[in-house]
Figure 1 (cartoon, rainbow, N blue to C red):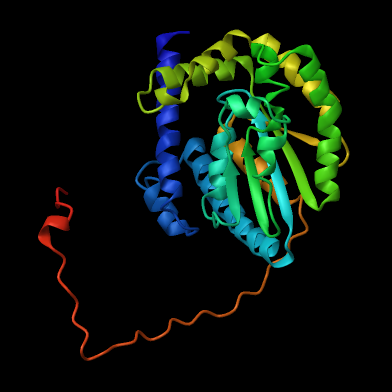
Figure 2: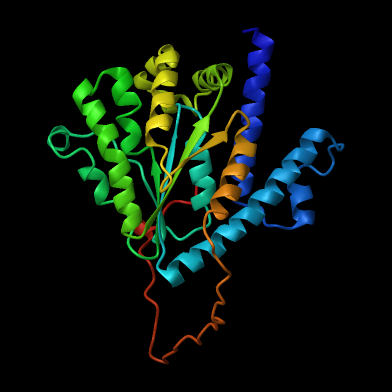
Length: 303
């Protein structure tokens, strides 16, 4: 890859990182949005695209808050599975979904590799404790589909275990649905070239190098094997009760918006009327004296 192309790519990634920080600060207000998006910079398609992204993201996050209230009120139970290649953007969309929600209602399950004890359990056993109770949403950042992907490609399961997974998973998910848990499954799809560029960006960005594990690098080498495993997985586990949805993810920001928009349309949520909140008066007692904090306990004011 030419050096100038890589430099442009890294520059684009830095802009995205900056935008991610802005997402925590911006509110849905056109004037503030323009100020933080460099009002003095001339209008351009790129600037307008960023403005559109933020406005839509905040609008969709507002709808997610409404969805959360509806889930709590109705006792709905939801499992959302995010699968895809390394660097496909799963973590990015999960972050935007949970960013403004109550972590007691909407939580993320990102399980590490199974330990020695867990390897002897029924394969699905370690996932069960993370399933939602009434009024909860659980986002699986990778899931039981590890067996159909990384475990198959890297040889961490044998042929019998692999086939047993495909025999079991449709019934397992149907059982979840029968018990009242809605199951939504997303596959984030990126091209060979896009993953290559994202890996290079991580290699050259000290703040993102931690995201690249030896397993990630090996997955890059085995691109074709992962492709075949993905195709088999989608074909054999796409069921009416818990179907797969493919998110085109070469453009990270578009993928985030498209996924959240689609997710909102999977549930018949309605806006829940919230009781008016009134701040109570603080109780005051004449004999109350606040004890000074010992100076040795105070964090130094370096900044």
